[in-house]
Amino acid sequence: MKTPDRFFNTVKNPNRIFKDSIYEQFARIGKAVSSPKRLELLDLLCQSERTVEALAKEAGMTIANASQHLQVLRAARLVEVEKQGVFITYRLADQKVCEFFLAMRALAESRLAEVEQIKRRFLEGKEGMEPIDRDVLLKRVRHGEVTVLDVRPVEEYNAGHIPGAISVPLEKLESHLSQLPHDQEIVAYCRGPYCVLAIRAVEVLRSKGFHAIRLEEGVQDWRAMGFPVDVNKARA
Image (cartoon, rainbow, N blue to C red; front, side, top):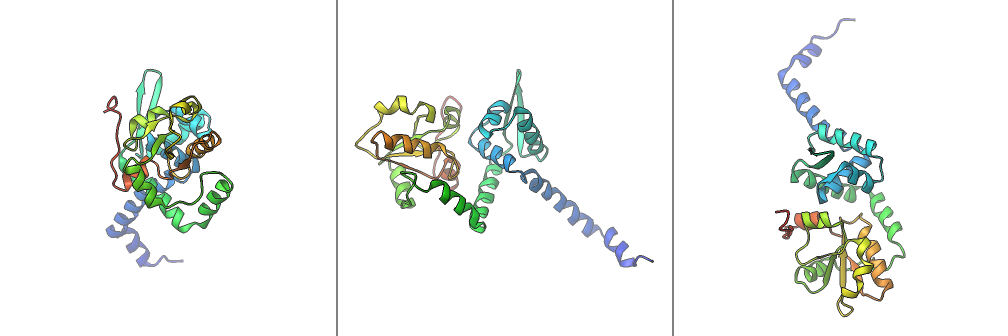
């Protein structure tokens, strides 16, 4: 069967070659973020740079598996790597990578009802997770009207935190209870709406008689809203 001339014209059309080439490059990003684990790694790297070992531990993976996923992200130029002795440290290639992740997360939240359903089931019955006026809480946090706890690991706090927040990593929370006020509301935050560190912190605080609630927004959400973020001077 003879192939129509228009087929060859389409293949050889420089406009079509150009568009196919461009969209092929765009698809590299889509392929790189098509894995749930790679998305989690990006979310972690939005908080701070990390070694492969630390990323593997946080994401519940073997070091070999985490390394493979990171290589895919690196091939798509989403992350960069630095070797320090025997340790390999990964960081985001650019702040725009985190902005991309947040935009993709927001799109999923707006288009996929399953996201809200999963979150609601997980939070059901947990104290301090009741719906609150987000704008009022954000205003109170910004004006220093509450005690704000950053319960992420200290290296994440150093990389960027809400101004005025106190660094109390979750694993050290109970040893710091005597230093926290009983006469002021305590707001705990971590990496964002799907991080469980602040949820656990609020549960601990409430069990000890503190009035504690969770701030869903993490530092990157805070930055995306146009609010200032403090960086530990030791890192600056």
